Image 1 (tube, one colour):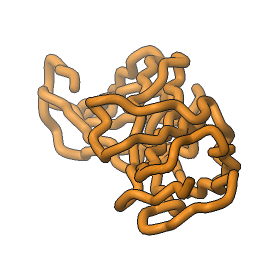
Image 2 (cartoon, rainbow, N blue to C red):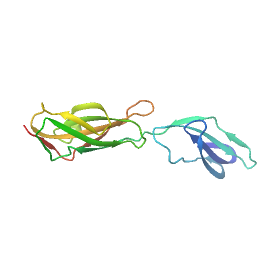
Image 3 (cartoon, one colour):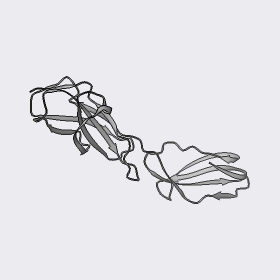
Image 4 (cartoon, one colour):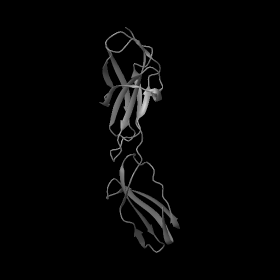
Amino acid sequence: SWLTNEPANSTVFYGFNTSYGFVATDPNFTQTHSISLSGLNGNRLYHFQAESCDTTGFCVRSEDQTVITLNSPPAVQGLSPNGGENITAGFVEINWTASDPDTDPITIDLYYDVDSIPSNGRFLISSGEANDGTFLWNIQGLQAGSYFISIDAKSLDLSGNQTVAVTDYSDSSFEKAS
């Protein structure tokens, strides 16, 4: 938002670089200006300039400025094992699907747990996996019992900071036979 000392219209030029490419306008003459921009991609650097023109056609435009939009968290869903399986082999194929609304790269961390409560501790299977939807887990040393799988999907913002990980737990436990 911005102010002018006389009634003027409102225009914002914006885009991914100083060529802008997008325009939002409000033709109403006012001294208090505000334009909402919709349809912006998350986790992106946008350049923008604000411009106001008075009733005589005299226009003033701001210098180029930038803003980084908020990073949307990724989504993840564990596909298998997702509960009810009785596993007798020495390996388990863990499958998932994960996506990011901002199309940011995603890394995957895989865990097993004896319940579905992450706050009381999980056990790391593998960290920093590529988001290819599958991981072969060697469970030969795992004791017989009931286990849950949890999957964390993580992406980075433009500053290289990790976003809040999104976790999905298997719907119920699987059984690892002795």
